[in-house]
Image (tube, rainbow, N blue to C red; front, top):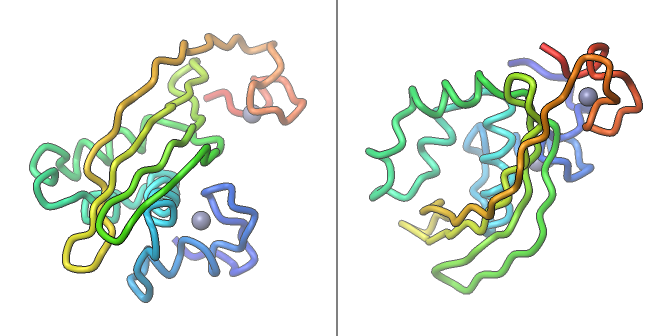
Length: 159
Ligand SMILES: [Zn+2]
Ligand SMILES: [Zn+2]
């Protein structure tokens, strides 16, 4: 995907993509902490960069998260935004609590997760997370879009 370097980053950081997640996606930079890695993984889902999502799993988790499944999930969702709630880490492990918002079919979904990260070969990697249950919201064509745009769903995030 070729993007102008003024594109706002997909991870909702408010920074330009070129100064946020892109250097991680192209491999010119490594995530400095779990939050950066988590943001870059979210952005990779948005840009359907399944390979990046796969490669940033901890090695023990790679086989249970094949690229095809990552790709299928990314392709089935319309992503809206990310909120990082809290994060902390030491030299070798860390955690991030976040809320990711997306549409799946005509459902508005929130993934609220406590993620765990470790350092492998000096690189931050995602292990797994605990998902906190959040009810999906069913959206009809004439509803106001839950993304907050102020538009009707049918003129906004509808399929
Ligand atoms: Zn970003
Ligand atoms: Zn919308």
